[in-house]
Length: 325
Image 1: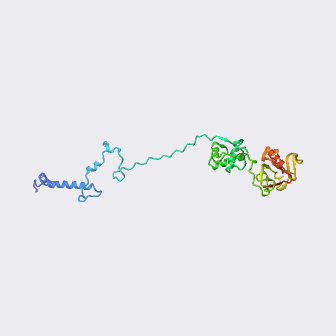
Image 2: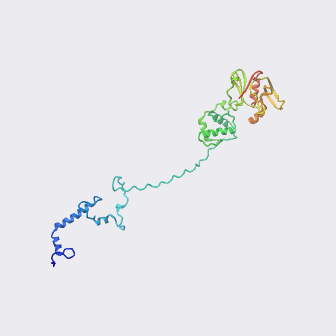
Image 3: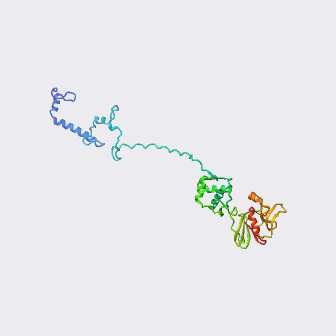
């Protein structure tokens, strides 16, 4: 039978006397507390288990303190800092906020600027149109001599100029087109504004370079009165239709008739210079009125009455006539 003062209480614990005995040995209790504290400190430095305290669990109180109570008031440290956040190398750096979402830039609104004012368009006839044609011809967009009339050929030339300069292609000459053309060209001379023919005179055929010659080009539809290779005067001409063509080749003037009237067609042929049968160079009132919309019966029509009258006075019989393409 065990005595009551042995310190064993039957439940694996110590009796009162055993407790007093433990209290009587303070050094042993201090050593136990130090061991527990050392285990707690060692566990907080590494993610693994501390050496010498493998079986010691981390303190429960420290784990609870790390997670604040949901009902606890937010401390000042939880508010956004006003100071700049630490650099990315700091272990406590907060993650960078997501960039603000970008929104698509709205499409530009169509321009509300008024269109450029039109200065010249198809159907106009003026000295300014003549200057427009001369300037366009100088830079290769108008293949004829200026006439002063804004027709389909002029409109096509303006479209060509506008397209090459990345301007709105309208065929009409507005302020922007006109100013661009003025900046690119010089002021036309009087000869460029009012040349003798509607189309540039072709380079003369080699048969026209000697002597007194009427040099007539079907290609340019021009007549050049030449003496020893020099152009004395030039004028627009038209020819016969495909059913009554004007003959080509080298001829001579064999008859002059100032107030001639055709016996075959009963039409006036003033200042006629006959060079091949019934074909002659003469003034045509129809050509003067209708231009190239018509054709002759084989003659070479001239529409400038003053010029053909002066030519009639200068020409002599036996002067050469050359008709060529």
